Length: 623
Image (cartoon, rainbow, N blue to C red; front, side):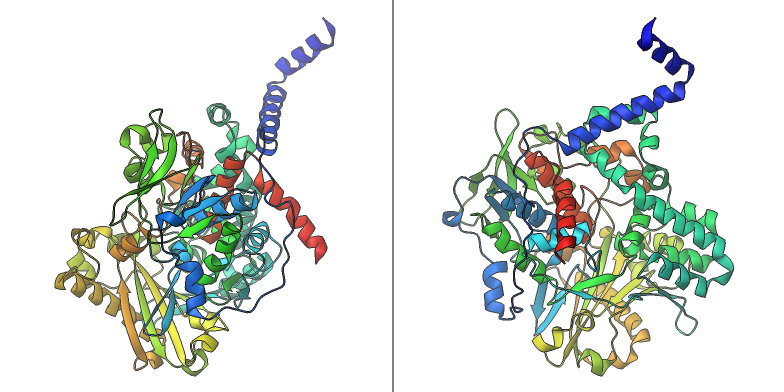
């Protein structure tokens, strides 16, 4: 019978060996595809970039020359390699990586400045950030930090926040319990939790073990996004996906389900899930796998960009333009142009003087899946993508939010403001109070307590703020809301939406500020600027379809289904069109950057992540 026959008999007698052999084959094939893509493009991270640190640019006119370059058709570069629609961090990341690989990239932004949720705005002398409040993984030589450094020529500096940068506050004024979320290391987090919950050691240890297991299995989720779909489907059909990675074991369960099994202590459940506001889905619907990834992201501390959030785009744009690319604002793209065969070949920019068509062999959308497939593409083309079939079915727009921006007289020191965020909830039933509030009518909501509010002082986190804006401070507060409360004014012009809209907006905004004052009563007579942003503000400034700030809803239904995860990838199924940003991986600064990394990997036919890992090792040696 020979050796082959004997081996075959052995495998048939031991099906687990056969299963293991098949799994090994699939895994090796996947690795070979992921790490050795055919005809790979140039390595964008071949050389470690280390340039002398330049002084912070504070002259606003000089900054505007970079961040606010208005679109002019005559200035569009010739022979483009790619067009990126949207200048959020996902779009800038994809463009920056492609530029470092020798590609000429045009980035088009509909707003009047680049950066997406990384931009800042100045009103009455006060500077506010809109989306960057704190970032993890920037304190050490992580892959994320190396990527940021390389895409900004090492010019973007970070300020490390205090280890207890988040403070959870539970209960009504006068009856509140404050619980700091201690970071710095896994041991620090465990110790901080045990200090507040000494009787819950078993639950805390199990939670910590789950965090570690998710951290070890996160690559499995990314592999599903880059492996050929036929392999992923085979892995799903055979159940081998769960042998390849344990990520989906956690991702398919809600945060509430997991915590209910761990403990009966409501306050402990709250401190382990309070940060759901960072992705906008209450614990009863959110994915534990995603939530654990978020906790891991901040495990070793958080940082804030020195000089403010606009520093991010300010230092990424020169890298994009170095190879002949450009980043233009006031360039609203109304259509992705396709040829008769369904291939994306360019975009149409709406101008008062008439539309301008720009062509390139590759179009990359950083506008989100909803905008890309429901608005920018002809529907007969959009239907060819498997992503389109998920929208409105398994995938919905995320929850909308309200934002409050307050300018204050006095420095952070004078006003006794800390570089710490407050997450305030009236009770420890985070899911119940959130769901109940979002289901209310607008009239009921205006007269109801807020289910949660996030309070932060950017001026207290950035040591350069007082140098740039002497004697001033700023406060930003965020709360969740229902898009339907404001949708009737969707077609109205900004700042022209009428008295009823303004009344509702300001009523909720005042309620938010009154809540802030219960923590900081010393600020009551320090207000010099007061503005409230609604979901319609988000729709206008960042083009989110329903005022959401986190793209597609971050539910267990989305992250726990490997087939859904497989479809939500950079490759759209439409030739010449790729997707980048937070809908590819997840929301957040690093999440959207990873979307840009996967997008660039697809465009270059190479494993750019592995390029970064190698560069990270080189960076570690050079220190």
